[in-house]
Length: 428
Image (cartoon, rainbow, N blue to C red; front, side, top):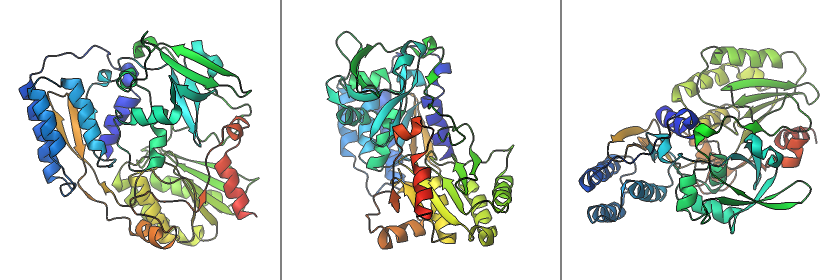
C-alpha cells in the first residue's frame, strides 16, 4: 500500500516540480500489445483472478494491432477496464506526471457535504475563493464528476469515495477526453457566491510551471480546529470548553521525529489532566499507509485500555478513509466496542482486496501497474458491524452511527460541523 500511495502522491501533488515536457516517444503496437499482456498475466495470478475477465483486454490488443489505439488511448481504456473491479488497490499510474498534467485548472475544490467550493486559487482568481461550483460547461456537477471518474487514476470502491474525485488536481487532458472543454480550449465553470450571485467564468488551463503559487481560502474566524491541515501524519488538539481531546490521524505512517509511542503518551497525558470526558480519533483524511504502523497502534490501544475506557470514544470517517485506516477502525472497535462512528461511509468497502500492492513496470505505457496481494480478511469487526449494527452490504464501506457532513457555512465561521455534532451527541 505504501508504494502505491507514494506513486499517487507523486502524481497528484508533486507534479508542479516535474518537467512538463510532451511525452510523444514512439512506441510500436507490438510493444503496447506486450504491456497489455503483462497486465493480463498479473490479473490472472492476482487475488482478483476469480473475477478476471480477459475479453476487454483482448479487444484492446486487437485495436492496438489494427492501429486504432495509441498509447494515451490504451492508458484510458485500461483505466476504464480496471474500474469495473472497484478495487482501490488496483491501478495504472503514469511514471511521468506530465502525461496527464501538462495543463491543469487554476483551482482546487473542497467537498463540503455534496457541494464543491473553490478552496485554492491562483492570485488572478482569488476573488472566487469560497464560491460554489454549479456546472462545468453544460453539465451539472454530478454529471461532470461521473464523466471524469472514467479517466481518474484512482479506482473507487464506494459512491461516497467517488465524491472526492473533484478534490484532486483536475487534469486538462481528462477534461478534454470527458468532453468538458469548449472549442476555444477554455473550460466554462458556473459558480455561485455566498450571496447567491451566479457567474460563468471561462478559464484557460495552465502549465504547472507557470503556476507560481496558490492562495487558500481562510475562514472568517480562525481557530485551532483547522482540520484540513494535513501537514502532519498525526497530531493532538484539545478543547477544554468542549471537554474533548481530538486526535487527527491523517496517515498510517510513523513520524520518526514524533513516534507512535510518544504520540499515545501525549494523549494519555492530556486525558489525565482531568479536563476532558471525550476522546475523538479523526480519520477523515486518512487514505492508509503501512500495516506495521497499525501493529504498533494496536499495541497502544490494548496497553492504554484502562485509561481510554473512562471516556466517551468517537471515530470520524469520510469517503477518503481507506486501506490501513480501516484496519485501525477494526482494531479500535475490537478493543472498544462501544465507540461511536461519526461522518460518512468509508471509501474502502468492508469486503475488499488489499495489502501491499505488487507492481509491474510497463515500458511502452510508461506506467506502473499495481494490483492487490490478497483478500482483506483482517477486519472481522467491520464485517460483524455491517451484519449486526448497520445491517449493510459488506460491499459497501463501513457506515457511521451518526451520519454528518462538513458544512461550508460552519467552516467559514471557524466551526467544525462534525466536532460540534459529537459534542452535542455526548452532552444531550
